[in-house]
Image 1 (cartoon, rainbow, N blue to C red):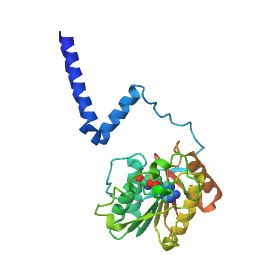
Image 2: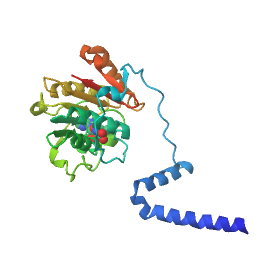
Image 3: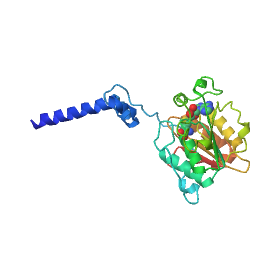
Image 4: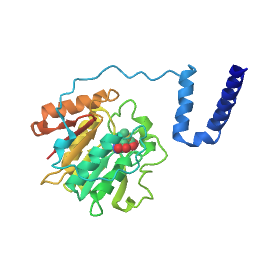
Length: 267
Ligand SMILES: C[S@@+](CC[C@H](N)C(=O)[O-])C[C@H]1O[C@@H](n2cnc3c(N)ncnc32)[C@H](O)[C@@H]1O
C-alpha cells in the first residue's frame, strides 16, 4: 500500500513537472536544458562526442596571477554563460587584464552576444571606448576567407551585442558590422590598447585577424588576446596560433593562460 502511494505521489509530481516544463518552463534556459537532457536519456538524440585531441600546444602556459602585479578589483557582469561565450573564469581573467591596464580604446573581433564586450567596457571605465565588429548573418556565405565548420552557428543569430545594448555601458561601445577579412579598419589603426581576437575560427581567419590586431595596436604598445587556443573544437585555430608563435619572433612572448583557452601577448 505504501509502495503504491509512493509511486502515485511520484507519478503525479513528475506529471506536474512535465506539464510545467512543456509550458511556461520552456521560458527559462535551465529548464530547456532539462528537456534537452531528457531527449538524450530517451535515446532520441546522441550526445555530442568531443572530437579526438588536437595539435600539440606549443605556446607556453602562464598562471593568470603572473600577468599583473596585484589582481585588480573587477566587476563581472552578465555571468550566465551561453555556448559561444568565454567561460566564467576566462571572463574574470579578461576583466582583470583590462582593469589592470586601464585602456582608453579596445577592439573586439567577434561580438556574438556582447558579454565580453560589456565586461571590457565596464572594467576599463568611462574613459575608454570599446569597438566590436561582428559579421551580419546575411553575409555568412559571402566571407572573404573560408570560415571554419562550426562558425555558422555563432554567426546566425537574431542580433549582435544583446548583452550590452540598453546597458549603462552601451554609450562606451560602438557596434560595427562587417567581415574582418574585408572590413576597412583604417580609422581604428594605431589607436587601440587592447584587441580581442574572437571571430571566425579557421586557420586563415586567425592569421588575418592577428595581422589586423597588430595594425590596430598603438605604436607604443598594447595587448592582444585570442580565444579558443587548444579547444578540441577549433583545431585549425590552434594550428594557426602555433604557426604564428613559431614563425614570428616577437610572438615568442605569447602565453596561454592556465586553465583557459586564452592566449595573451603584450607588444
Ligand atoms: C565565438 S563568437 C564570439 C564570442 C564573444 N567574443 C564572447 O566573448 O562572447 C564568434 C563571433 O565572431 C563573429 N564572426 C565570425 N566570422 C566573422 C568575420 N569574418 N568577421 C567578423 N565577425 C565574425 C560571429 O558572428 C560571432 O558573433
